[in-house]
Each structure stands twice: as C-alpha cells, then as structure tokens.
Image 1 (cartoon, rainbow over the protein chains, first blue to last red):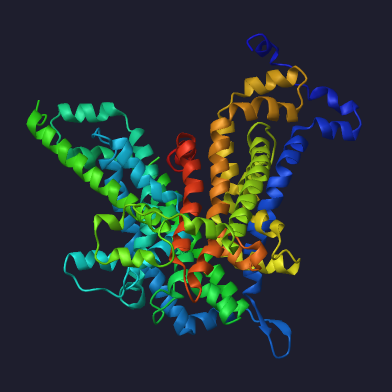
Image 2 (tube, each protein chain N blue to C red; image 1 turned 120 degrees about the vertical axis):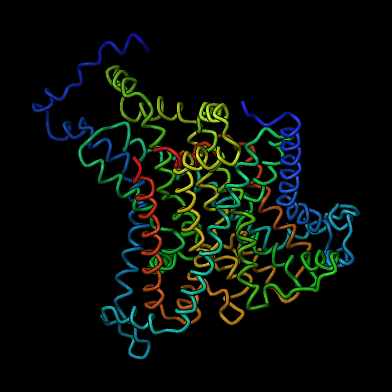
Length: 310
Length: 283
C-alpha cells in the first residue's frame, strides 16, 4: 500500500474537456456518486418523504362519501380536531403518558447503567439479563403482559402471596395506562441503558482518579463528573425515547383498544381509529401531521441541547 | 487521601452485587415464565399460578405439544413470512444503504450536503406516523397483501445509511485515490476496499434493518391482512384475540418471536451495540 500512495497528485480533471460528453459524465465523480445514491435516495423519497407530504396535502381536503367528491377545505380538518373531545382526550393521555414514562425510563436506565458498569461479581451476566428483553417485539411484550395482567394471571398470583387484593389492571380506567407503561419499559429500559453504558465507558478514568485524590465522594463524583460528561448520550436517549413513546401503538391496539373509557387512547391509536374504525381519512391525516410536528419539535430540542455547549 | 476504608468498600460492592443480581433476575423473569408456560399446553398455566410456587416457573413436566401445534397453524406460515420479509429486507437494504453511504462519503461532489439532508430528514420522520398515508399510497398501486408491499418500507432506512456513512468517513481518502490511480473503478473501490473494511458497521446496520422488519406491527397490520400474507406479530395478536385462546400456543409463539432476534443480538452484540451507540454519542 505504501508504494501506491506516492502517485497522489495526478487526479486528472484537466484532460476531460476534449472528450465526448458521455465520457466526461462517466468520469465525473458527481455522476458516479449519483448512481450509487440513486436507489437508496429513491426509496427514502418515495417511502418516507412522499407519504409525509401526502399527509399534509390530504389533511387540507375533505372527502364527502355522499357526493363522492373531494374538496379543498384549508385548515377545517384541524379546526374540527381541536373541537373534538376524543382528540382532547388523546392529547391529554399522550401527554400524561410521556410526562411520566420518559423521566421514569431514563432515570431507571441511568441508575442501571451506573450500577451495572461497576466491577461487581458476575456483572456481565446480570447486565446481559437486563438486555434480554430488548429482543422482545412490542407485540410480543403486549401479549405476554396481557396474560400476566389477567384477573387470574401472574401479577395477581404474586399479590395473593403477599396477601394483597387482586387488581383489575387493563380493565381499570386508572390502572390501564400504567400497565402499558410497565410493558413498554420492560423492553425499553435495557435498550436505553446500552447507550448510557457506552457513554460511561467514554469518560476518561483519569477524571475519576483525580477527583478521588481530591477527596470527592461517590455522589459528588456522579454529580460533577459522570452527569456532565454523559450530556450527549443522555440528550440522545431523552429524545429517541420520547419520540418512540409518542408513537406507542401495538400494546394499545392489542390490549385495550384505547379503553377503558378512552383512558389509553394514545395519539397513534387515535389516528388509527379515525382512519379505519371511523373511516375519516382526512381527519386522521391532519392528526398524523400534528404528530409529525411534535416529534420534529422534540428532535429540534435535541439539537439545541447538544449544541449549546460546544 | 480520603478513599473509603476497605471494609466499607467491600460492603458497598456486596450491596451492589446483590442489587445487580436481583434486578437482572427481575428483568429476565418474565422470559423464564414465557418459556415455562410455552411447555404447558392449553390453559394449564393458570392452574400452576394458584397457588404460586417455585414449580410455577420451572419447566417441570414439560410438554412441547404447543410447538408442534404451532407449526401447523396460521402462525407457522406467518413465521416463515416474517423470516422471508426480514431476510430480503436485510439483503437489499444493506446493498442500497451501503451504496448510498458510499456516494455520500467516498466521492466528493457539489450538492452532497443537500442529498445528505434528505437522508437526515427521512429518518427524522417517524415511520409509524407516516405509515397510514403510506398504506393509502400502496393501496392505490395494489401493493396490499403482497410480499413486495411488506418488504419495501424496510429497505429505505435512513438510519442504516447514516450509520454506514459515519463509518465510511473514517476510511482514509488516500487509499481511494491510490486505488483510483491504479485504474480501479468506483464500483471496485466500493466492493473491494470499502465493504471488506466495514464488516462491523455492516453487521450493525444489518441488525437495524432486520429488527425494523421483525418487530414491525403497524405496517403489516395495515398492508398484510390476508392470512397468507400475515407476519408473525399479527398472527400472534390474532391468536390471543380469538374466542378460545390456547395460551400454550400463545407463549410458544411469543418465545419463537423473541428467540430468533435474541440469538442474533447475542451473537453480534459487540458490533450491534457499538454501531448503535455511535449514532447518539459521537458526532
């Protein structure tokens, strides 16, 4: 390899003016790059960006079943949504869900990352056990916990051992949302922990050694070294986790259908219900657009969080 | 020096180890229960739950009948569908993503930034959110209930392109220039230099593509409704929604759906976690 690096300077753009156009195009790096990019970019444009644009367009129209005509209605669909009590409920439930589950999952992931990054007996094995559920698909987690939450299921069997009364879980308006948080966190926490552990390993150990010499205790070391040095991975996990929790769908569709009494009517399920149960595609598309905007705002906040210090 | 005294440190370590063990077992516990329950045909699991004992969670009197029954049910077909869809997605997704990443890193040209912007934008748009408008578009061109319709959305994966571009950018341009001088075409540079150097990131991106399809629920629910085109998560949810539920089979199906990605994650864990972690923690 060392012999070839000598002849570096002769990249030949000067000769190409004399050649025919097709040969120049063949030689041009941009044309080559575009050929490499074409299939991948085509997929992204058609399968990600086009549907987003089509949702925006469709949200501005109204389809009338009676007359079988589609007419432009401007922001009417959005206005209808904002007056709709089911939509209010969906917004409320989605916010409540996220306000609780995101800080909870991140605090638990961080605590586990710190604990399972210590030199403890068998720590690699314990860490692997926490990792295991990340392989569980959301639909499987929903189905398994459904059986666990049954009146005669696993959780109530445990409660009985401790002499506690059986709980309704998924059929209770006050417990159903919490039950869904549990099954989402079981598969989520280990996943986010993985990013934080990798962040912890990037912190130079010399920082800890220096602070120990200065007499800093474990808590001070966490607060003044670990926490600030973990800013990047924490910001990333916060955003990625929030986005994924705004989009929770499978457990709701499989377990509760948004009930009881709309208590688990999270945004994605509300959209699905509007599109297919109620058959109002244009309203559903308006809600898709709102959900996309919310997730984009969350991501924009991440970029600010990451940039503010550099 | 004010380092904690040796006995205190030892105590801390013991407490830590006990905590780590309890938490690890708690997380893995539901999976053990799934395994045990999958070996108890029909609705036997409920009789093992009252009263609760150690025997409720250990696969004693194991009976694998549910797995046998599963093979001949709709779920058997659905698992095959899931495997086919995920594998085809990985092969074509890796090829197209690696090519795109190559076009965005190895070759320098004007306007590259704009094209990279499209990649970033595409993975900022959450797929589940746009799957309802996308399903609408797919129905217009009759792609519902086809393998093509199930596979296509998994192939265009901005995150996979992003991951590989990060890795490709670290490959020294001198190597490329030298190879070009020796008369190697761009395709040669891609297949003979970049791909062989990039095995860890190919594994990471491949896992990303695989898990996207394997775990998908919303998209196959919208587009693969016909029994012959159902994917395994949909078939599992349907099994649980039937009037008489065979819980042994539900758990057997759950275990199969979990073990396949689990084995892959454990085999490729180092590559997978490294490449994923690099999205969030580094520039």
